[in-house]
Image (cartoon, rainbow, N blue to C red; front, top):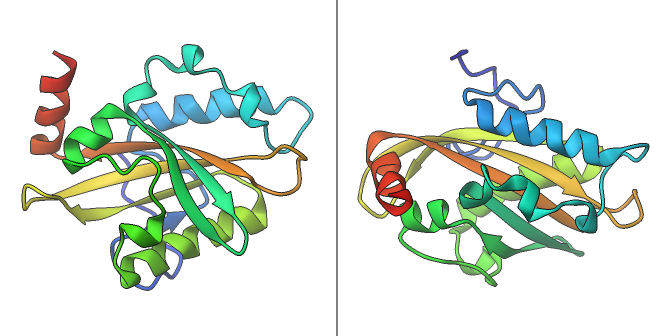
Length: 174
């Protein structure tokens, strides 16, 4: 496991931004390779190019996020491993309905980078979860676009690095 790179500036310590995609875990790297293959000659694949049946190994850790303008984000899909660790299912909810303003500012800063650059982005940090423990996590966010210019959706994979969160996920998988 490589040490985290120097993060880009975000409003707090919870969301560090890594455009170099220096993953701790191999799963996001595999998803990145899948996304790159789906790009073909485009900068970004379309939502229809992503086939959930091809992502069985990742499905429990995936999110699908709808992007609206002016910028507003909504969860369209949240994998069961994430809902188990978070002890909630926020499918269909907007980020501003879930996250406090300081965390929302950090999340939006990372999405603004991805929307501007139309490129994958890794975020990582330490988060406080419902069981009152802190967990390290990393997320790969991959832009999707119908016109290859404006990002309309984001395919993401959230990976937890913490024994209690992973124990909850293992119980769900068992």
